[in-house]
Image (cartoon, rainbow, N blue to C red; front, top):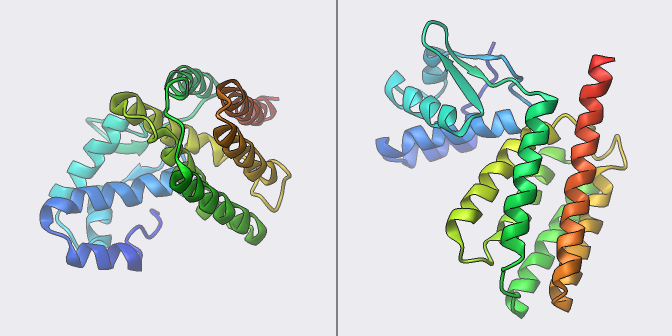
Length: 233
């Protein structure tokens, strides 16, 4: 049984949205559920059931599912329909390798932020720290991605920024495999890493910036690979 996708916030947006926006709203909700681990790999995404939840026809639902299939987080079988894409250690390694290449290229060239931009980044870090104290993992994952989005968007290299964000979304599926912030010390170090990123930006220390981002990415990748190794043992 598919979880309730059309929550109150989505319903309000749906009522205000033009029909042309409906596929994007549906895709956004399904994407969010997949990234948070609420829709597990292999789950069938029934078009009729989704349409009923959004009080919509199957046309925008199918458009939304095609969009998500193009992103790679769901797959389409012509005979069986749409399913949440499988995950694997091999794919995780490949995605994190792509992130290493793309983010490294981007961060080597971003202009240093001004005082206003630095203050905005610090506000985001404070929000992350508060979410950790509350143990609100879903919101933390979202705000964590938004922090890095703000960091990437300091660059005017739009194509690379877009691909970095796409890779980030794909790896967030894997991050959802890790224990929540209250169950493990892992995520509690997240804001510390963000603080180090901010310090590197303030100091205009490019080498330190790259080092902190790479170390954090490698740490999370290793934790994810350990999850797969434990499953196989």
